[in-house]
Image (cartoon, rainbow, N blue to C red):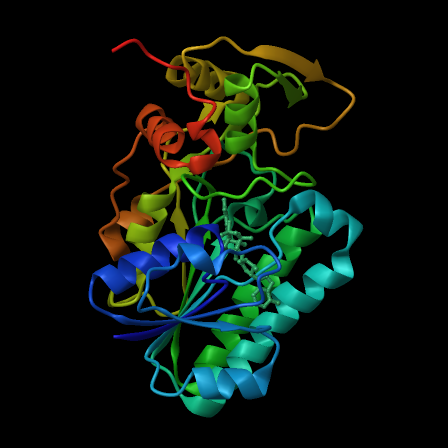
Length: 315
Ligand code: NAD
């Protein structure tokens, strides 16, 4: 298989590119490096620096490609509230530009990394793909628009399309940008570094934390699985954990107790969001392998950010 991964130097992109390469596929990566790090890509993967909205560049990168994984995006919920135009330009405009280029060159399938916040607040904790989208922030609106453009243009242009709605992914290599650090590496760093863990709200909001290898497993299957054309498929762990429970597991893994501060002035986001995995199991043969404790253990052991913070154990 010949594959192009946009955003392939980012957190999920590097894990996906390296796994596809390990399986013997030809892998090209396009990334503007607004957030990614191409040094983590294995030698043998072809890297091009550039913007996903650059259609002439895409024409040349798409030559001979069967499957396009579209990951390039702006990914911060709070930043999307500050800069909605940028989120629209990159996440929607970038997707449409890529779709036009795919239509012009001809590919077999596009796989989009879509996002759980599209669901917004639902009446049940566990959400399935039939539920009506209720995006509450510009980031979620941009991912929903990207899904719809992809299904529509793919259908008119004769290539297959599938959107994986990923829940809260975590694992080694996840960046920690000061402006929008994801909750798991941020809390891990604070607990290991004996800082304060600041929780927005009461910490009872429920999330579905999914280890990056499980996300990659679903993405790899999505390239070849039959019967996925124009489907939306959840990818999570299927297990809900409150933020308070998450801190408890981090404390166990780190062997240290957390100094938790609750900031009740700041909203805590959606109250609950957990993936129904039935469709992923049926269509992708998906089965998450890594539970939260084991995933956090691997994060602490394998991520260089945490290596110098790890507690020293007596031999
Ligand atoms: P990331 O920020 O690490 O990766 C995104 C990559 O896209 C970065 O390397 C960045 O440099 C690149 N990029 C951004 N704008 C670009 C542009 N205009 N042209 C080319 N490259 C550009 O984020 P991630 O966590 O790896 O997310 C990857 C994808 O998965 C995104 O589409 C995101 O919306 C989706 N997703 C992630 C999660 C999660 O929990 N990490 C959950 C749901 C969905």
